[in-house]
Length: 613
Image 1 (cartoon, rainbow, N blue to C red):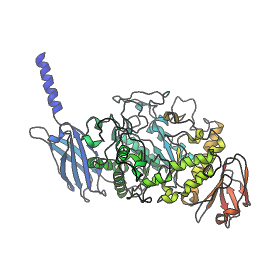
Image 2: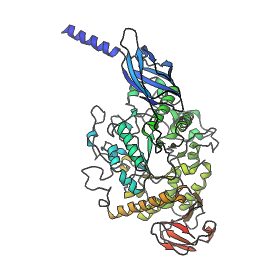
Image 3: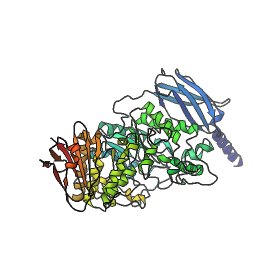
Image 4: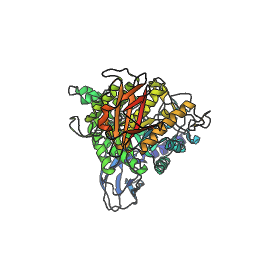
């Protein structure tokens, strides 16, 4: 028995001491990419003890790099512009041992015209949390071997079973609503022990979470969206990863993530990066501190990290054909790296869109992160737009605030007057709510008049409008905790008692809200003024705010009455824009106004008029 045990131990030692190829990333690549250089990450037990060779015309192995962890090699390849698509073996050899081979493939790029289109102010984005929208495939609700085996729709912290197939099943609903682009919170693997349904604690950057589907299904999802005229935005998180991921269990090098003598949190402040009086220690805390204990902060000044992340995000764009990235926690990233990252993406995909989450308070803070060095930052971030939280707060104030010099609708006017700080404010994402803040309908006190005002402002404002899932059917709640604003879309599960995806399943109020959004979204798709027109606004008077969207083809007048009572607006002061127009059509009611010298305004309303001569 003792000899048998020793034999088993010897066999186990031999098996575990030999190299095994566990990962090669990127798993495959493409020919004729703008950057001919490619750095492969190779992971396997003691792989650094092996020599590496390959033989393929047009591909040169320039250097094999060893790092402090012997379980990794980094291979620098040069891919000639004349290299042809095909497969070749990367051979790992060590004297006296069987060679290991990885069949690497160079693919032909997909040049289809509906891929990598970019997202513009012509679009309406619809934000979805996949776990909470619809369960289209119950077979992937639980995946054997994954750490979190919970499935409980009664808990806001557990997984609910929503997936990519569920979204695919309801693309027609989104198309009917008037949506033109879909943004999903991260779909990649989050193999964490607890509460990772949100997707922001990645454990594998090259893999769709199996509870959502597969890489192939994600690509199919993108193709189906494009076939319906819907663009796709992918949510990415370069700042941090999940603490339980494969790489965190076996780091290539200690400084792959930021290390501290003891756990150190970010200060969650964006000001130190822009503050000319800031201390170096505050800046370091902002950029290098961990977001939370379960989300280690990636060291983006590490050149290996830089190559890995740039290639990963280019890989997803080419592989799936997506149209834009929303970049999570943008202010916490290394600024110089993010600029280089954006340049690399734009060099390969010139039409691709990047917009960063900047959960900050002022226009100046937001502009600090955007492209063009417009606020004397000293370099160009190449970030086209941001999530416009400053405008979001101003819309809330316009709807809920009392009239005052800086209050009520005046706040909205003042915020927009600072658009000069941006290179192009039309590239900002405008929104009423999202997965991190309270639901819009609750913020306005479930006042339906104010709800309609907000929707009207959203869909007539400059920028790219974004609608959070369920806002169109009056989903409500406050974000304390945030799980309360991430409830399931009823009808997305087979056993739901009602189906909000259908008019029959919605209440009268919900159908009125849905149809109001649909009318404006459909009009916006046909309105060149609302899509790409200029914005002209007038100083508010008596808590009435007037702005115009216009071009040489069309002029739309929007009147926001923030008062508790109906008003009559004398329009003579708007002659600069009304010049030549004598009539108008109310976009919501379709009423024809045969004279526009004065306009009656209901209480708490946004009146939208297409001007006519």
